[in-house]
Amino acid sequence: MAHPPSPSPSPSPVSPPLKDELDIVIPTIRNLDFLEMWRPFFQAYHLIIVQDGDPTKTIRVPDGFDYELYNRNDVNRILGPKASCISFKDSACRCFGFLVSKKKYIFTIDDDCFVAKDPSGKEINALAQHIKNLVTPSTPLFFNTLYDPYREGADFVRGYPFSYREGVATAISHGLWLNIPDYDAPTQLVKPLERNTRFSLSLSHFSIISLLIVLYVDAVMTIPKGTLFPMCGMNLGFNRELIGPAMYFGLMGDGQPIGRYDDMWAGWCAKVICDHLNLGVKTGLPYIWHSKASNPFVNLKKEYKGIYWQEEIIPFFQSVVLPKECTTVQKCYIELSKQVKEKLNPVDPYFEKLADAMLTWIEAWEELNPPPQAAAAAALPTATPVKK
Ligand SMILES: O=c1ccn([C@@H]2O[C@H](COP(=O)(O)OP(=O)(O)O[C@H]3O[C@@H](CO)[C@H](O)[C@H]3O)[C@@H](O)[C@H]2O)c(=O)[nH]1
Ligand SMILES: [Mn+2]
Image 1 (cartoon, protein in one colour):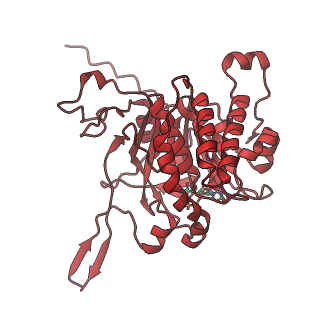
Image 2 (image 1 turned 90 degrees about the horizontal axis):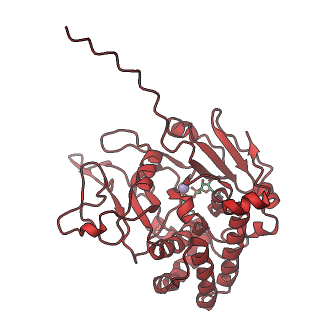
Image 3 (image 1 turned 180 degrees about the vertical axis):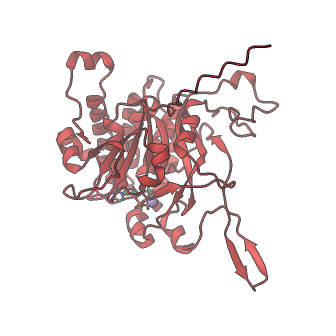
């Protein structure tokens, strides 16, 4: 008789992907009860919480999470005068978490973003999808009409050059949102009730049910080289080793003439640099459920200058040419800062301040993230987080 099959060894518990190579960065002004819903997906990972606003306020973090928390006093203590480049009273403060992290990957999420469900009703593990997006190549050089060719069940279509099929390394994974889409204030004002949901039923005339099938698009696509995009920071993953120094969220909020363009600024700078360094940016899955409709009138006050400035900022980024000597993100960023100062200063003196802050950011980045050989030599003091 054939030997009965030996019982397969009980599968070792699968370790969450990139568990020790990824930090989750959360900017916050409120208690982090939202983490309860994310617990199954986030608990295995280290969190970096950047507390904005009043540092004397205590932020409640649910038990069982491994985290370090930084408030404004910590930012000032760790960066000294360089703290001037980290925004106050704006979600832009999140980039401090990118600075102090020591991991290869970052996932950043807002505290009013919850677990969404896909059309089958299954809960979406947004973190796992970002990881998939980041560890598979991008295709910025030639558009694949079946979108992500590396996805299960897809591939490159006929006519897609084989010489391009290896793709390029993916630097950024940009996720989307159900319920409250990331609209600017004017759009939010004119469409106060619009929700991006799988569907919503509205009864009219008691007999007709109109299904508002709004956008759950089951796709991940690479943003083509040479094309900018509006990067939203609320559901965003990136490879910190590939593009980290470009993920500066600018000077926003308190004391600044503009707010809520932090992620946009970072996205425009990062995309121009990704294009120059042949790195990829993806957008699409995963979706999160965005719950908070921030006050459009307050938002309008913060973002109105950005709404007309961007009509000059976008042509600037579209015209940026980075010299071939710019072979690292830092060199690209320093060159970009020079061009910002020269070409955007006529738009508003704010851009001279922003260009200087971009340089301060790079100095801070290099101080906290020295290249390995320099670190060994200098054994620089690293950030001493509030360990919990
Ligand atoms: O002064 C502040 C205000 C907020 N935060 C934290 O930042 C995120 C986003 O804040 P919130 O969700 O309240 O505001 P939204 O209008 O929905 O944000 C959208 O606009 C972008 C702003 O740049 C943002 O990425 C989008 O989600 C929350 O975690 C707040 O706690 C803060 O740190 N400081
Ligand atoms: Mn929000």
